[in-house]
Amino acid sequence: MSEPIEVTDENFEEEVLEADRPVLVDFWASWCGPCKMLAPVIEEIAENYEDELKVCKLNVDDNQETASRFEVMSIPTMIVFNDGEVDNKLVGYMPKGKLLKELELAQ
Image 1 (cartoon, rainbow, N blue to C red):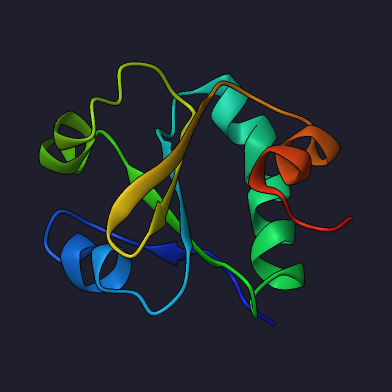
Image 2 (image 1 turned 180 degrees about the vertical axis):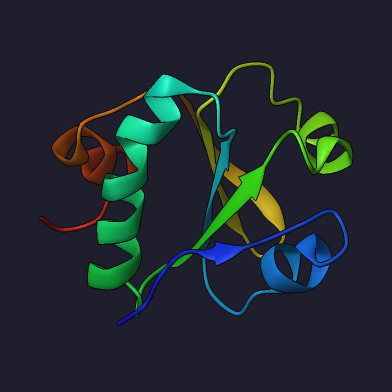
């Protein structure tokens, strides 16, 4: 069973930018209500699509350098990285079906 990988300012480059497959990063904070609503969806995607997508979570309060680098102004923000580049940026809570459609993953 695969769970989202916690990434930080220190390991972001290695875990996300140098990954060998697309990476979904959930930028979140513990005080954010929509982030809490999104968490089970992110966990389910990590578990069900681990062969297609690496799923990571980054706490913006603890890792402000990376959040600022990718201009995360609102949370939750989900950014898809492909070959170290931003491929897609999604802002706000989304139900699973809509998120999967945005990520172009089969349901």
